[in-house]
View (tube, one colour):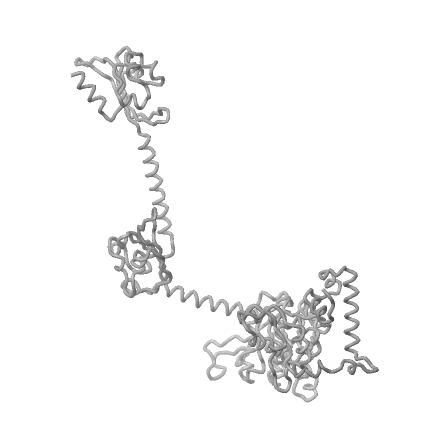
Length: 575
């Protein structure tokens, strides 16, 4: 019987240690040996306190109170133990026993379970908080998760989807979940219609891979209607921004010619005061560029910049567009009337291009605005205060127009507070190179090219042209030259330049180069040759002074480094 009891005690999953009323160990089974690392033969018959240092069995005997399910550290192990009293048949206490087991693995497992639950809660919180609609299927294509945004988008709840095949929500199109499960690859920007209302969505799905095994698919859905609305709002915003902002600054005006430098300096001064400005110059010289730059350098730059081409609108339309109109002012007038450009530009800048084209009646109204700082809408009687900086531009001879009686003298003097003359390109031929580079930079972006430079011969050919269309014509010529180039070519050469009728850029220059140079020189040297010789000598002196340091030389000459290289190539100065 004793043998059978030992077998039972050694076979149990619990470690057992027992003591008698004298605190001597009477039982020490195999699992107790394993967990404590103490041999049972050593332990049996010895006082428990000498064998197990932190034992509480004597306390149980002394207090005659059991201790149940107590956690205890046992070296590297964590155990749970119950200490009970042992009684004889008469109920008399004859000893105590500790029954314990290793719970280290259980504690670790519980910790992992708690962590998993925490992660699950976090994921659920993310899914519920996400504004995007999300759905998840398992490896068999069965829906297992949808979030509230999915229900809002499709009108389908969990009872309609969870536990059902991935195609359950599709009204039109193919299931991207099933495609992902089939290919194990992501599917992007698929157009589908979902739910009873056939909601059109843009869907992207990706595979869920765990330990290199496909476990499902997750999809994110976007409402196409919302995307289209946002796109339209963005277009409107861009249009507003284009109206609000001048596109160019003084940094966009390139050139080192004294005439253009003088015009820029005058324009910068004009930007600092609220005076009216008249930009005068031929078509294509950059009057609108100057107007934008003045606006952007002024304290009005954060308000609207509105451009009006006076020559493009007939008399009646121009008046209603400038000053606005009241409801019923004329046939076709909008209900509630309309604000004019002066009201829209309040606090900002109004640029009136081709100012010389406006008729006498509109000139009178414009004069009133400049004098009284107020406008009266067409069909209205009430004056409306306006605060507008006016910039006008014209290629017309306003003085001659005054003599002919087509332009009011009083309006002329109101407008012409700060006249700025923008020189034509033929008066600033020395800027051809830097202007050509600026055109190349702009057209590279538009044409998707990577042109780096323009050759000396090409620049010299450009300098021989009269440029009736000014900088606008130059940009056209450079654009056509780029079109004539092969994709791999990086420098505009003489042969790339286009022909232009009676004023061809490319001319028959064979005779020019083959003619005996001695015939070019007569008793009187041309002014151009004197200027070029002087410029060459000065560049050489400055180069010598700075030991051919190009950066320092360009700084001393007050020109760009690129212009210096161009002039060195022109005068055949060794680099």
